[in-house]
Length: 505
Image 1: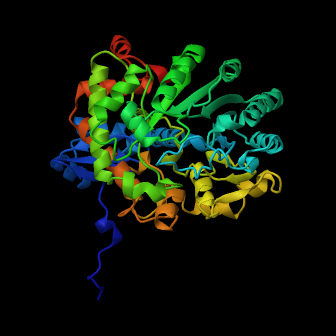
Image 2: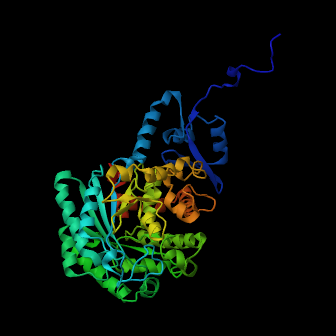
Image 3: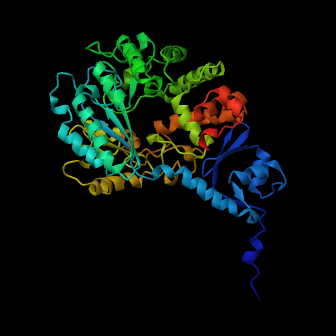
């Protein structure tokens, strides 16, 4: 007699009206947020979410159509959607193409400021010129940089205060332009400077070679000078303001950008900080939190704050900035712009912290003053603190292949794909986030890290929660402002064209 305890496999199969594609979800208030593997999102009420799970959606309804068009499901009669999904996934990960695009040259460790939150382990002005990059090292690093297969390269000069070694800076620019006659890459130059020793000849050189300036401005005079105290009185607010205006006049408004670093003294001054950027005609503001490197590690108790405090400050700033934009002045918050570009468009961004596979080494390389090569600026900072885990090699002793295909890069790659990491693999925000193994190693001594206690995770999860909650409210004005930032247009231009994606077509 046949055993009837077990049913045939066909008994458990059911005719699917549609098939689920991979997606992640979380409850936000009274709705479910769903995000697809290419970062498209949709809010569902509990009933529709349950119907989706039970394969019981109304095939003629709007919910079914939205789920289908946004790649949460597919049906046999719409199989071409899988090809579209593959194309979108390729587009989202296209930052990998070409390999390393951002190349940072640390021209010197010497600096004439003594900022409490400095992450660069600076040296005093009186320190030996040993801490300056030599012309020979500069040329050797430039030659290594041009071996990158990327068709576009951004060269960023950092320090210390990089203008203290203008000889190396100018040599790298001129040698890069000479080599580029052969390689024909798209070259961009940025100097990160406190603007304390800016001379007319510097500005003339920047103008001739289309070099942009990135500086630091922490807010109005009292706050800036408290955060960025200088024993040389060099980078005080008065000097920075004067040289921002000189640079804008010489190079144009769009060639000068600034970012602020949030300390505990910044909290409660959201409006005043934003107003200072507006007063100086700076085109945007980047709300940056403290980093766990360099001198900032030693001073965190004095100037630090919790992630909850930073998130409150971020929201206060963003809400005021939104009001500024709605009043008629286009003024983006740069971090939010990067995030919503990933959330609302199929396009990628170049922000190293939020890339998967990680941007460490794959998107950025740092050439230290002594010729050592690192996977990121944070990697170099760790080395200055005595930990050379992420040192890739040296421009004089290692080949391009040894540097980029050696054991250190293999180590970084092993923890560099967020979609495979515990705590990230099932997070609805992973399409917009990054792995950042260097930061997790620095803070938790573990490249993979524990997301439950990760300050990186707490910060970005809090920001994404807030942005998605606002998007879920279907606030048309809020979305219009975000789209104007993404498209680099005014609200008036956006409303006149009626096409949010015009810049990308």
